[in-house]
Image (tube, rainbow over all chains, first blue to last red; front, side, top):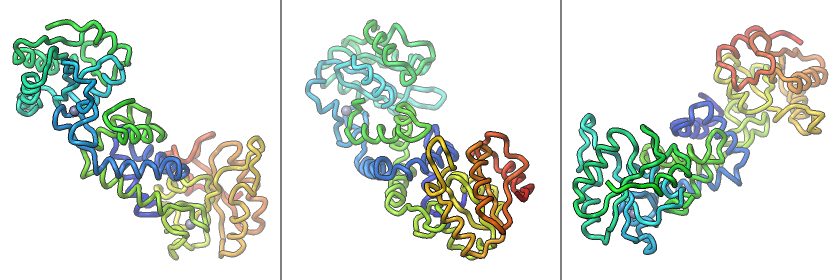
Length: 197
Length: 197
Ligand SMILES: [Zn+2]
Ligand SMILES: [Zn+2]
């Protein structure tokens, strides 16, 4: 490296660890920020410092936010009896961008995987079962990725849930497709055409 | 947007303004940082805040650093009578990565351009002429991009410099090529084979 400051070198080194950036794009990003110090670098430093201190997982659903309970779980309008189960926070965000789902979420934190020795207790499955028992849940929508592990996990959860209506995203989700890569319209269509398991 | 926190939304929005990142990669970068809070997010927030306050242009050469005079201009070992003239700080960094040049730099801040009405006074050309007069300069190496504006600027500067030896990067720099995109070996070769103008 050896640019002209240890701090600048360190900044570039850390930026290069972000997914999608490498050393070259990290250098360009840093030079861009230096040129836009007041409009970009300083606000980014401020909000990053704030988020680094405040960000946490929602104790209820596993979404991330800046309070013990996330904005969605705190919003009484979202308590409509529907819980949408997703693998990761990025999937929750993808669902939110479709503006179709008005209920609450449950973020598993992954899928069951025999290979990686991930069982129900490694995920937020026990907490999901408790929520379905304790909250006034009428429908659980399983919005898991259309991968083998995702579908195995969906069937495992459906088996555990018993009486409550369980549906799954249907039309529009391509085989092997991950929610976060789909366009918002596809997600909307899949949610509209969801089928009961 | 509407993730589950205004701060998170704001962070994603600002990250998406970095070159090479868009909304999707900004979201992925933020989720990655959240997962690596102690190892990545907090250190990045710290160094970004530090750099946002301290970064400045070197009053002598135009490089960026965290003091009024950059590390290279402060280093007496780099005062060997050679000044390498580049367009942008990113070009200076590219030269440094080649580890070939042991002198000092001068960052013009662009090129002459009739179209954009950029004359010598819009660049750091008057300051370069002063440095060549005042410092003990024996050779000026013009490491400008192999573009029309870059070469026009090189010839303009060579004309102004008078007695001092002026050379330019030669072998290896492709036509239309920008220094920052070249591999380090190419830059090394071009510097070795530099020719007197
Ligand atoms: Zn929540
Ligand atoms: Zn300097």
